[in-house]
Length: 148
Image (cartoon, rainbow, N blue to C red; front, side, top):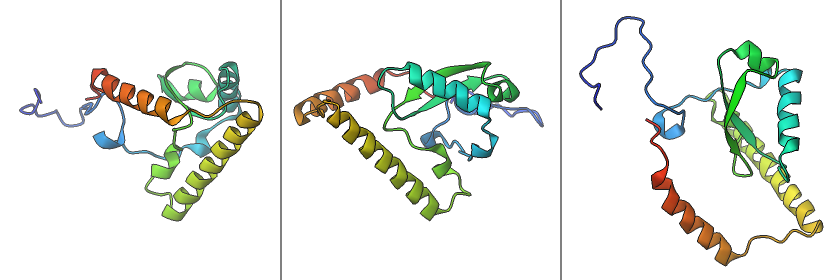
């Protein structure tokens, strides 16, 4: 808000928000075609090094996309687990039916992972613990740094 009276020079890039999010007007594109075998191998290795990490995605920052495609030169800024959505479903070029199908496939995978973990002896979280955790998250959320 402190820059409302500024007028950028022609061609000057102006960062509008610190982090990309739907609420801040971020545009999401399907970059699946840009994934290389090196990227996939690197992120698979990282995921496999995380105990009991069966599903999720990594938010990364990088200087050069070519380095990222080679599987290096990036920093993981966030790890999203079971609640992560495939970003491509928010690409305006993804047909709505395809987005729904992909989301349902993701939910099927999560169910299968949960069923396999229960078969291994894991117990699902009880409602009381869920409510406690939910309330704790609501207490912590206002303490997060602003994304704008």
